[in-house]
Amino acid sequence: MDKQEEVSQNDTESQITILSTPSQKCDALPSEAKALSQTRIVGEVALTPTNRSYTPQIFNPHSSMTAVTPMASAASQVKSSIKLQNCVATVSLGCELNLLDIYCRTRYSEYNPARFHGVVMKILEPRATALVFRSGKIVCTGARNEHDAYISTRKFARIIQKLGFPAKFINYKVQNFIATADLRFPIRLEALQQAHGQFASYEPELFPGLVYRMVRPRVVLLIFVNGKMVITGGKSRGEINESLDIIYPILRSYRKN
Image (cartoon, rainbow, N blue to C red):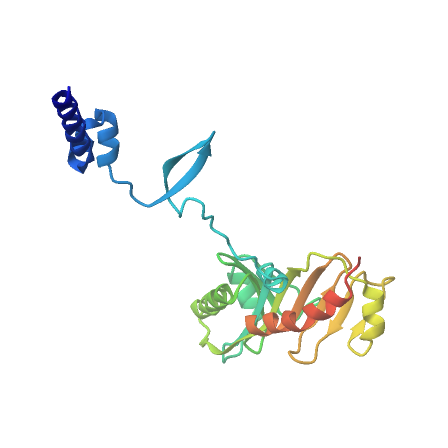
């Protein structure tokens, strides 16, 4: 009996030592568990509760991140709403012109000296209108931007040159920008006129908008009660943006609730 007990104790000890080695532990596991133990989990492991146990799951930290676009300020939104409606440019041809001859030999032109002392010429591409005077001065209007104004003025000068006049292209200059903007909020025009009477004039019986004459930059703003605005008198885009930077905080303080 004593020998049998010693043999059984030795067998149990040998079994315990066999299972205690790591390599042999893996051999004792089932095949599916062995495959899971050999797989390598990449990334962080998030523990999600399922009943009473926790199961590891692969978690990508970038999956929960959402792209956030910065909100533009109100002033920048108003600037983005600016649209150029007209660009007026002038140029001198450097010679005297026979307006009746120009009218008779060109298309899309009008000449009525009883009403206006100049020839009104039009071109279709870019769409623009020119006022041609006997002194050789041309006023080009109707272009949507400064590039179209320059191209159309060059075309008008070339048309007159082809008629036999010694026309040149002298002293070209952009004289006026007309732009529109939307403030996106209504304005108390009466209170604005009372506080800025030195610069503003408002007579709703004659004109529905308030006329605000800015000193620097030298532009004129037509401000309407619905927040629409017309900016005229600027000689560059920079003057239009500068005038909007100055007038916006003033109009913001007179916003209707």
